[in-house]
Image (cartoon, rainbow, N blue to C red):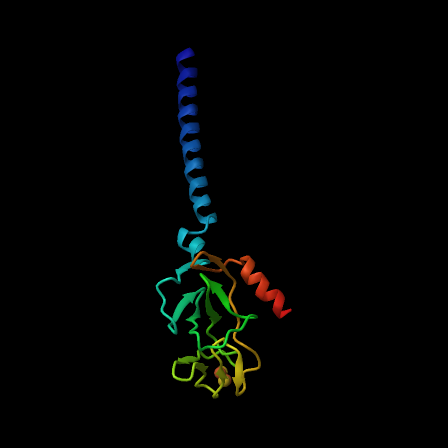
Length: 168
Ligand code: FES
């Protein structure tokens, strides 16, 4: 009898142990699906080192599936204190590169220092302000933070909040 009981206990314990291990494994698998993938977590932010950019250089970056224009202004380009991003005493235009008319991607025309939209002839100045054609408003400024000479896209830093407050 005693042997029978301890055998049953052993089988019970063994089954319980398997069930517990299975439970832990499936909990682990479930947690994996709850946690965002590392690439998704970091996809919301991009850090760009602005220090190697030369005056007048325009770069197009990808952020959250959108084109972002970063232009390092030259001394000749008009400053716009309501829109310029200042990093390391230099002024930059940082804008979402989508035309505010119907969303085409304008191109940078360095000779005239303008962003031109080929779809319906819209034009924007070097600060991304609409100057001609159907675009109803300037191109949007994405949330950003300045960290020395680095631009962090996707984070609302004090410089971004200041620009937004000026617009309001
Ligand atoms: S979409 Fe740019 S002018 Fe119409």
